[in-house]
Length: 526
Ligand SMILES: [Zn+2]
Image (cartoon, rainbow, N blue to C red; front, side):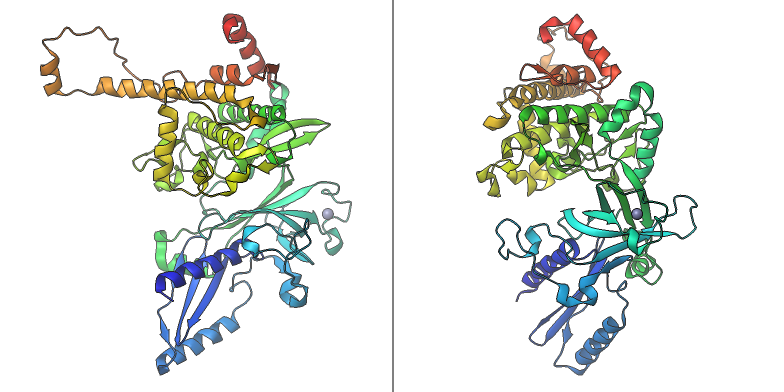
């Protein structure tokens, strides 16, 4: 096996173990090929390889024996099992089963390509000090179906798993369980130690969402508790941080227990989808304007659905990458270059982009989410058959790098007339997408013209002197936030307040007033 081939294969194993096994913080993989052996360590920040051990040589044998001995002496936490995890299958391997596909009842392909249930009794214990912080109290949940897991070794490694309070194992709920009859999920991720918990953001939103603003709570996730678990001094993470300093990104284990929301695929009609997108845009604007928080990671997976009293609401979920408006986090480019690649604003994917992350960048993400969703799906719960091919037009966006995406998105925006390729089911989105496109097209044209006006070259001026100078009103400044006034709330509400000729619900009094004013002023737009 070539060293490169071996690395790719091991990386695949590491990904499967970290992303599809029980909840882990890191993993060791030992590869033995003939007489050669190597151990590799993977966590969410770094991959470290040992030297090659030659098992035909005494020194190689000795080091290999030492390594095996050391691994045998490690605690489950040192071996990478997340602290608090208690999986039945680890103590009794007989409960370990190959996942069965519920529909076909047959054994399916390796788990790396599908979700699975943590079968048997798997529990997770976490700090729960809501009443008296620092009291060292804990709470236990029983893990159920895994709803989402990220698919990579490096990064936040988010897992969303359905849970229920394990009251019976636990004394926390003696006086009646406060989570009874609630659909709960636990979200577990590994953010850098400096990241603000989204719980803090949501608390701020809750505080301001009163009176005329209370509507927004229908569109925000309900978080029941959150917790951080730091790595101990004995953990490899802490030791690596001590040894490598700032070059190693130290992370924490962060968890949240929140209400389970439904995915976009649960929707039945194109109109419902339109309302959900409109809801999310309204909520996103409110959070940006009032609590002054910018989401910064709008993607298909972060747009969720809540059904309450028979009404369907769009919910903007996953505020893990959010930041306070105007207070960018200190640190490397990666701190402000945030998002999910296929949906990031194209400027952010340019190598020279230096921020800041603006409100309009998130709106550009909404535009890509709608474009991809309405093209790749024949209905909300069903992908177009061709889209299973990785080379399929927009499906490719999920595989490609920043360079490809920056260029492709720029080309999409800069084509003067664009025909949105929505499937028949989503045909009503064509008008929305065309209008969104026109706003971005004009905005970026405007930005381009402004930059051209600023460009002065003496040589070109000499050349142009004999010719009469056209009287051009030179712009003194350019509003980057709105791309010269083309990406504004006014345009958004005009585009999205109706869908296929039917009025959608404009939720807040502020936007309702804005819309009435706009329709009164410009009846042509109605
Ligand atoms: Zn309980």
